[in-house]
Amino acid sequence: MFTGHLFVYGTLMSVASGPLGCAQRRRLQREAKSLGRATTPGRLYDLGRYPGLLASASAAHLVHGEVFALRNPAATLRWLDRYEGIARGEQNRGEYRRATRPVRLADGRKLTAWVYLYARRPNAARLLNNGRWLTE
Image (cartoon, rainbow, N blue to C red):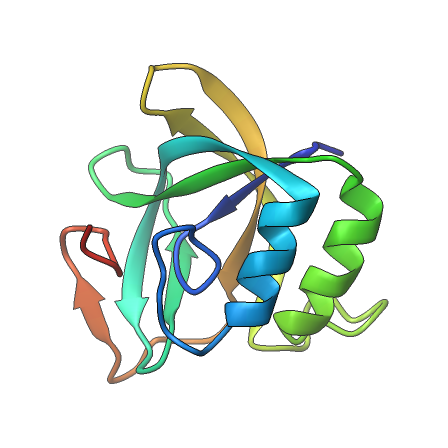
């Protein structure tokens, strides 16, 4: 499924302020329009300098983030894949994989968006029970 929406939950969020992902965050803001806060089913882990989202089918586990409408999805996703460590044609080998997931915007609208899912076991990573990596 192809979609022009992207759900972010860490270094690419508009409210993120750290140096990690700063250039990519700015570029994303130039190439896309923020649709605001949103949630998607999943479990969020603190991996140290950034978070990782593991998919969940349960609506009881929600990850909080932000949705962007991409102006040129193919071009933006190409450089985002590189940023997330996904080599062309190697969707399942890196630390993350890109997949479509259901998201719900703060106003209640439901969309399908691209999400970068953590592709490894979280092992000793701390589960963020509130589903938020950043506090606003």
